[in-house]
Image 1: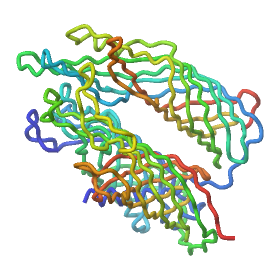
Image 2 (image 1 turned 90 degrees about the vertical axis):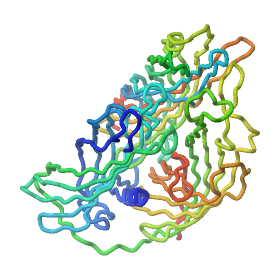
Image 3 (image 1 turned 180 degrees about the vertical axis):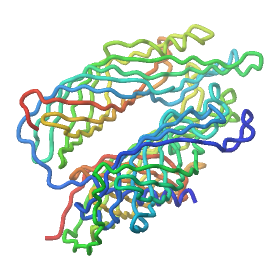
Image 4 (image 1 turned 90 degrees about the horizontal axis):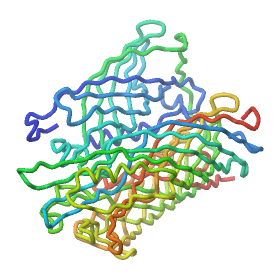
Length: 237
Length: 348
């Protein structure tokens, strides 16, 4: 019964008829915007485990709850033909997520423990996205975002330190990386837009490096933000 | 929800509320009359479980559609649909939340369907009452994923911001479709498939029952013939990178329990599919049942016959999609998000 309802739901949902698109207006000049936004962010990564045969315990590292992200930046929209835009951007970004490290001791006299910390970064982001112009003042953009880490609060390292039973060397630095972005822009006034975007870091990893006896952790963050853009080179959109 | 050691009687109480803002179709779009002048928009809901805190206090943002089965003078009987994303669940965790056995993720897809009656009680006020079924799931991206099902009655008040100026609900004859022709498309999709490894596995003796995530990528290339306002039919091929090939874990360097890796070619599969697309303006629903014709066999592999059911939104020729890939007509493999491009060749 549930499957039938799900199928019917999807079939009928398609009948949303309000997102009408006719022939889109073209953009024939370069547009420049100042922008900023806020949203929610979180860490994703494969669940990984460590087993310590000596003390018959294991630990696992998990993403935890939602956290906060925000950014300010500059953006250009450069026409590439009738419906397409090149939309480079530079942003100053704060992004965070909580991470939890469980230590499972398999010992009835010694309860399991966990440590949960906020992992936060400030970054410079350089989106190199392409946009498609729809009608009704509605754009979509997508593409890669290169980011450079300016600061890292080392929340993950602190969580491990709090519950570890023996010294462990960690490397969780991410000096540079790449994200994927999908965004939608809705014009809300002359020279102004509201954008909704989804970002996801593209690489995540956890492995042990025998040469320097270090556990390497590369966390991946995702975010959804709502932003506001204001055209600065002239009025009108 | 069934009971657990900490909550043997199970959970059977839930309460919640929602607020929605929407638009009433007026007939400005050719599809309005075809659908009986629906109302659509977006909403926010919150649920609480007074018997326990192990599930969290989920909220959701969603799109909604209310459309009539039938309208009378002041009364209408509607079907209601919602699709969105929920958050603020307290997921299953072997240490922090071992009693929760339904969902392993903070964020879960929200889908709901039901029926309601709506009665006009003034120029701008309507009362509504009905029942809806809600399902929360993460599409096997974070186990456990038994899912959460809620069957809830609801009552509500609707306010018309247009001063009671309602459309005429005129039924027009369907216009002739003049743009028959071929559509060629390619999409790139991505999803996460999680596999559980149980504690009796050799390398996982010390582990709790937990899952490991594997990536799945898919390039779909297809051709369809659009034969009317609402239909396209065609077929194509899926080039699949199935990251969950022969899943197993091993104890690697540094005592890290990690996924066993295989040669790249072992992960590749080729599928062929037929495709039907139900089109309504720029949104469409796509059903693409397929069959894996090339893949490397392994014990416990999913069936060769698979199903893909999804939604697509077209921004001109750019395709943005989300769908469920499944086997056995309901056993989810993963949720796929996709981007693509189409080329239309209408007959001259």
